[in-house]
Length: 297
Image 1 (cartoon, rainbow, N blue to C red):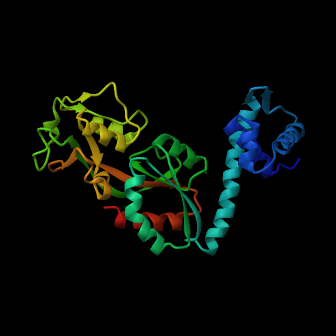
Image 2 (cartoon, rainbow, N blue to C red):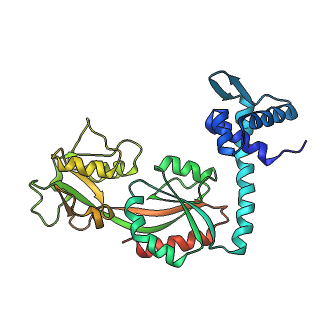
């Protein structure tokens, strides 16, 4: 029998959505069309791939194994198309870029003008993910490049450092340290440290910086964003660590919050680009990474 890429895309969409209607919408076909095609695929293969129940759609064991291989086939197929397009104009077309929530809002305003000027034919598709789902989507071929904090597990991936970003301390404006020009990590001893929720690498980095000075991790508060952290600092609930870019531009003079740099050597985080070794968009990724490195700080 001859497998059709279209049918594999339908099957993967069902696996991702666990719902025929949402899978059909993702594939831009009607639900009856998608369902009928997958029935034909099961008949042609001679094995059931999907368990259908009134309020539940799941994959059989065979379905799970076939979906895993279908993903690789579809990724390779997409790479063939992308490679052909990139050979015609490597700095044109869509480039799917994901950034951490603690990077995107602060980095993009600084680098976007340079990208538009230098790479006018490149169409960036921007996404925001935490580290784990970003790496999963990179491996799965759903993204071309991720901008995140290093180091990360690099199996099948390549990376390039873009810049190193110092941390700053965000303090309530009447805090005892607000009068200081710089703050030492040791000065934070005994302070209540406000943190992002689990899954944000910045949470782990802040804990690592302060791990030796006896700060108190606020157990009854977990922020979903740096801006929530900033507002909690303004209420006097504690202090937090912010990346330097989050203290620049429009965010520099937040009401009720004072930002102070660390005394040298300041703790910092390493920001890099990560992509698949097999990517066909290496030229575009290199050009984008170069611009970010030049204009980030």
